[in-house]
Image (cartoon, rainbow, N blue to C red):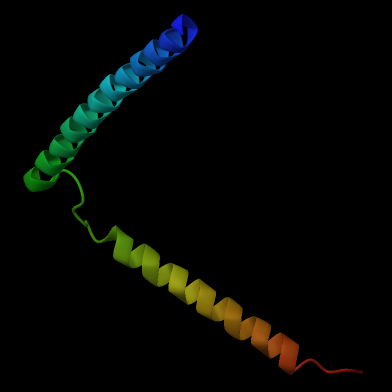
Length: 80
């Protein structure tokens, strides 16, 4: 029985340590979230400066041209 009791004690210690580590991780994540929210409210983070709109339009244009070009090549190639 003493071996079983030792195993139970070890398992309990392991779970207690794991619980402490998880609580510390949760606290660190909360602090990080608060910092991100503070930066966003101050206008330092998550504010669009307009460059993302230009980049997305260029990506859409390139994808559209590539798609049209590939469709033209597939369906209009001369089989000679």
